[in-house]
Length: 166
Image 1: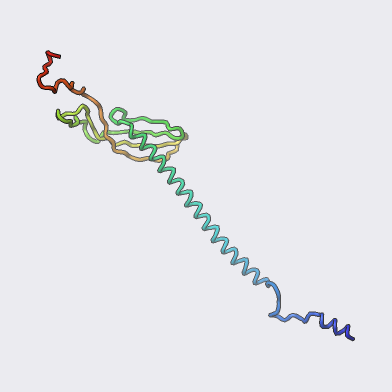
Image 2: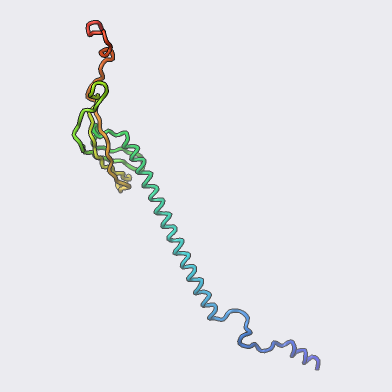
């Protein structure tokens, strides 16, 4: 008889409703739904971060191209070359200028008139890729100049020296 008691004591008592181990199907579905909602929010966040990083990168590229074009345009004299283009390898800088003021003699010291004539120009600048697609476009105000006189001889300003004695 001791064996039959042993068998009974080893047998598991019947499980009651609140005494179950593990997840029920409903608890598993709720956990999956919470996980899916969290992952959707994380993917949305990562997507917006990637879009922002792409926008910043594109903005930095445009700023660098604009600075390069400004540097190129600093050596262009719009009075001598109203339009043109310069190839910079990956892209081309094109410009077209129009005078905004009439050409006037510059003021110089001590004679009152400088060696140059000057005018303000408005220059439209386009920066295009090799394929012709536009990278950036802006307007620029520049001073155009042209040398129209020769400097006076330094000997003309010395007292007591005439043109005959030179």
